Amino acid sequence: MTVDASKAADNPGAHTRAVPGVRPVRRQGFQLKAFSSLRIRNYRYMWLGQVAASSGMWMEMVSRSWLIWELTRDPLMLGLVQLFRAGPMLVFGLVAGVVADRFNKRLILIACQAVTTSMHFLLALLIITGQVQVWQVFATAFVSGGAMAFNQPARQSLVPLLVGQAELMNAISLNSIAMNTSRIFGPSLAGFLIGLMGTGQVYLFQGAIYLLAVVTTVLMVVPPGETRTNRSSPYGEFKEGFAYVWQERTVLTLLVVGLIPIILAMPYTSLMPVFADQVLGVGAQGLGLLLSAPGIGSLAGAAMLASVGDFKGKGKLLLAGLALFGISLLAFSLSTWILISLAVLFGVGVAFTIFQAVNSTVILTQTPPHLHGRVMGIYMMDAGLMPLGSTIMGGLARYLGAPLTLSIMASLCLVLVAAAGLLSPRLRRLD
Image (cartoon, rainbow, N blue to C red; front, top):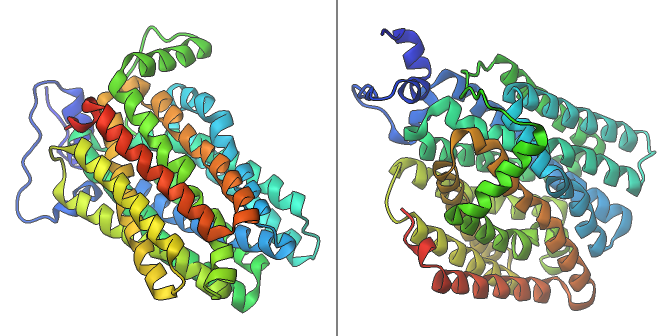
């Protein structure tokens, strides 16, 4: 049996996976280990699309939050708009996982990105013409959230197909680099542009960025995945995914632990306009900086993971990252100086990215390829629960103030991390 050399170079992971017993070709010469997955052409297109889509997403987080704050001046509304944006992840997550396993993942990504692009342009038109109302912001947030719900399982389950298991940790870390590079400049750019030309024009800019993500996904060629001759009905595949997660206790433990920061800590982003305006007094431009600082930290954390590749002791590192995340967020809630706030938010970014990248990698390596979409759909449902934390935070902040509210939630996060480490030897032993 022969293998076309050019195709093998273009997608080495696929061939080593498809031909049992064949060892991967050793790399010749000097290569930067941190960027090894980018030598795969189709993964490069996927990665560039991730950069574009993430840039638009992080810019929109500032634009949407600031728009709602200007329209309502209500912390609870900030939490509720997060509910409408991320809630579809919970509502559609399981269905999206089945869709990702049954249909063409590339076409799913194209459709989802096109829907998000149209929502950005629609909201830009409403703002520029002076017709925007609160319910319209909520409605477009919900539609964009629905597109994201179907986008994420398809995108995550596509990574092993493009790069193979040997490069999986590196590729997931590079995805985090893409996400967090855009997280650095996206919020700052959005805050600057809002102050310069207004929210409507910023939404136009975001729509154009999403168009770039559509183009890169169209250019991507996806190798064929695992063929299954005993495929059941959609409902049967739905049950199969649930049954696997319930029976595979390691995966179930990782999914449950993933809920801790999503519900109790990550919703801190919904309170950023309050901190920027009332606690630190830095306005929209300062809001962009506050949301960019965790992105810089996340980029640093992802770069470290990409450089080390595969390693032992993933369970211990996962718990350490989650503990550092809670400690850094607690420090931020107590700060009233912008420089200290930016420094501890850097730590928030480092810690959360380490936790999330390690968690995603272990889940994918523990799961059979034909179940990747469904398991990642269940995993992405965690993000759908973030609005629950946002709503709780928004309600508490209305009566207790944003700093005290965030202190309480960060402390609860630390307590639960300690409990998970003590009560789950399985988690500590993960390699």
